[in-house]
Length: 182
Ligand code: S3P
Image (cartoon, rainbow, N blue to C red; front, side, top):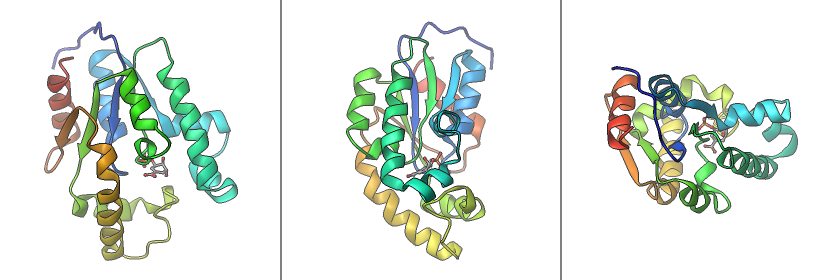
């Protein structure tokens, strides 16, 4: 695909469960559009000077959610138009989803089947404090199925949604680019 210089007037935001590919897709779209990509977790790690796991382990999830909320607002307030990949839990705490919707309608929920997520996440569980103690792929599938179901109400508020089943990063990205008319 040809590169485009965009005159977008609001941020582009990717949401979805852990492991759905938000960051990789955001990088692809950023490269295509010349927009700056920021991953909310990376921003938190830089700002706090510690890993997400350290924040969870030493300060607790509640503190993480506060920091996440503050960082989200800082990024949404950016004058520069950004492509933001959020954490899987970001839309589900405080009034974050309403907040995001007030800034932009360019929000896409990447919906990935539970079984694909479970396989991916079991391999990468050490990076994710909520999943690190799950000790089999079956238990991961059970956890993901329940947890994702609980979060769907928030994710489904996104004006755009893509089913990522059997699609690679470039296919998902191109579909989003077309959908939000970049
Ligand atoms: C979380 C998702 C993670 C990270 C933290 C909590 C969640 O981000 O913010 O571990 O609650 O779903 P990714 O979705 O980028 O893995």
